[in-house]
Image (cartoon, rainbow, N blue to C red; front, side):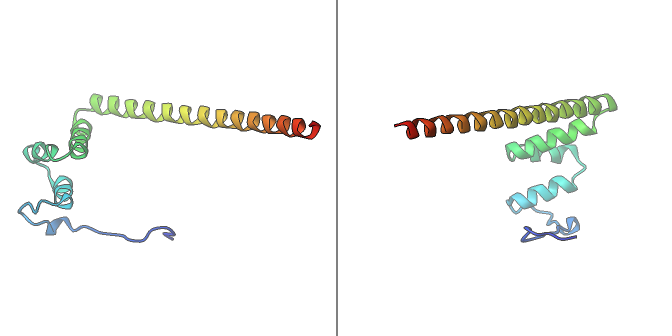
Length: 114
């Protein structure tokens, strides 16, 4: 496999995670990945908005089947909506470009007549 624009690959050995907090973001993310303790997760959620979101998503996905399916459906709907917005945006960019070209042509015709 070729990694054309990739300049660095890092691997993390979770077994080598120091037991004591070293106050780095990396330590907290490794703790998050390694942890299976709800108390640790709640502590980690207080670290940053990103960590809080990650803990919330993990808890939601770990919940019962119905909750997980609701989450997946909500995410699918969000992605579908983003895709629809992107399609409409591309369509209107084309319309704007077409109209800009028409205006430029009319201006050129007007300039030739003067």
